[in-house]
Amino acid sequence: MNAEFMQAFEQLGKEKGIAPEILFDAIEAALISAYKRNFSSAQNVRVALDRDTGEIHVYARKAVTEEVADPRLEISLAEAQDIDPRYVLEDVVELEVTPKNFGRIAAQTAKQVVVQRIREAERGIIYEEYSSRESDIVTGIVQRIEAKNVFVDLGKAEAILQPSEQIPGELYRHGDRIKTYIIEVKKTTKGPQILVSRTHPGLLKRLFELEVPEIHDGIVEIKSVAREPGLRSKIAVHSRDENVDPVGACVGHKGMRVQTIVNELKGEKIDIVKWNADPAKYIANALSPAKVVAVDVNETEKVSRVIVPDYQLSLAIGKEGQNARLAAKLTGWKIDIKSESQVQVQELV
Image (cartoon, rainbow, N blue to C red; front, side, top):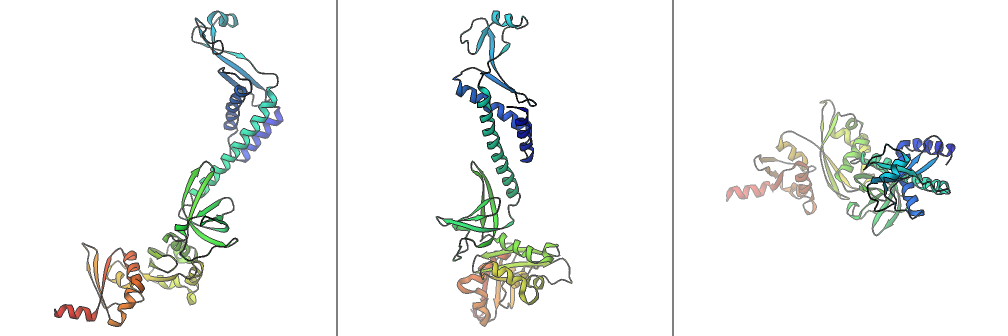
């Protein structure tokens, strides 16, 4: 290998973010394997690669011993002192054994090592980039579907949307542009594996952060999110500025902001409710759109009893209990809903 060859390696290493010394060390290690493989050598060898000229020297390393059991690994004290009188027992003598045609093998090996290291470095860069974006939204294009897994092209990498992370009933077609939420980035032998979700509550939260400037600026805070993907969600918001209505900010002018998110989630209904430090008021808000008459709370057990007008009972509970279930998930409280008539009957009894 000549000096120009070495400069090219060094330049390539810098461009790909690999320290040249790491690259050269890796080449030397690979050359040792190449020497042993091509020259059937069981010797203990060291390869020295001149960083400036590209010259390669192979040295057999032999331990100085009284009696030589294996001449490939050992040298007698007398032979060692013939080379240099200063050698003593247990020293290591290095004898050059560079083959004449080793340059061609070395160049080929060096190229393979550089290509491999660059591939590893690029994988490492992609891993670092996406692992730092866990719990963030990425936009990608549906590339293919295999065994119900949807593979999404993110540009530099490919993400996997597994069946458990897909919105029930949502169809994915080749070329569709979709937003997904990064839940995990794993290191594998084939490079980083990026797992994304369309069902995670974090997706809804990040969509609001992107769509509502007041949330992005920290004026409005998302306190809690509860989702039944593809069907309905509830989000509790709070304003740090009393002059800013948190619900209105999230809904937007003529409902434009929330409608953009509903469209992204293919029609998933979203209830935006006002968070309150008072559990009773918070629970009442969480049961929106139902109207609540009264809320009794047991703070020790985090259990509440909610009273609603008779005509609001089915609305408060929701289809198959969905509204009550989401309100309980949003607030973290167990909610028992009763109509006014039911309460009156219980009191009479």
